[in-house]
Amino acid sequence: MTDLDALQSRATVDLAAATDELSLRAWNTKYFGKTAGEMNAALKDVSKVPADKRKEYGQKANELKVALTRAYDQAIEAEKERTLQASLSGTPVDVTLPGRKPPSGRLHPSTVMLRRVAGIFAEMGFQIYRSPEVEEDELNFGLLNMPPHHPARDMWDTFHTTTPGVLLRTHTSPGQIHIMRQLCPKPVRVILPGMCYRFEQVTTRHEMMFNQIEGLAIGEGITFADLKGTLLNFARRLFGPDRQIRIRASYFPFTEPSIEVDVDWPREDPNCDRLTKGTGWLEIAGAGMVHPSVLRNGGYDPTRFSGFAFGMGPERVTMLLHAIDDIRQFWRNDLRFLRQF
Ligand code: PHE
Image (spheres, rainbow, N blue to C red):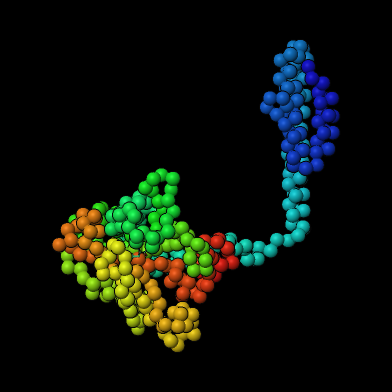
């Protein structure tokens, strides 16, 4: 049986030596722990005590248990009070100080422009579709009227993959075929924004990757006047209500006729010369009437349906609007640049 006097003096000395909450809790485990607590063990010993001494032992053990428990509770209380006093008299916390601001993210300047442009076309009834960035040669070129070895393919320096016939799209125009085949024979009025890739010598004005926004409208009786009206309306909503557009003849294999579209720039703007290279006109898009063979490749009968298409570069427009002089900034991930927008 346990020597209760020895247990009492050990427990008392140990408790006096415990000076913080952690060691007080350790003391409690040592004497009152469920599995190996010494006090608990002493209580269990009652059954081993010879019958004539059992009553005396049991009484004494119980008294010791009560005394130790009380001593422990008092010690813990005192310790809590000490900690509270220490924190109250220590360096005060100024709860009225403003909180630390979490770093806030922002949209990439290209995303801002894509959303603005998408908003303008949405108001004109255009829906937004996506089409793949990894594309088949057949869709990027073939079905757009450029069979293999067609010289017009030279207009797009291309990244080919190691899988024959699979490339990174050089423009968003293959999306025209995707969407026509999906919606045929219903009328189409969509924009297709997204990244394009070209095997370009990277300079301040040329990047290997950039966004394009493709526009496509197909229906019965759509004319060149609709294309003109749509682009004029777009230019006025993006740049201002008094803007004029100018149309120049151009060439793309998938549109006939093909055009380039310029917007006039106010002469009184001090940036006018820089933005327009002195001409007063800013190029915003390539466009044209969808070629009959392309309509046919999309599933539409060109004797019944007609349509227009355009492609514009939102980074170019963003550069002009914000006087950004190097297109490489867009994908450099330099926060000093990105934070300005
Ligand atoms: N896809 C052409 C380009 O990348 C632009 C374009 C789109 C021209 C649609 C006409 C019609 O240069």
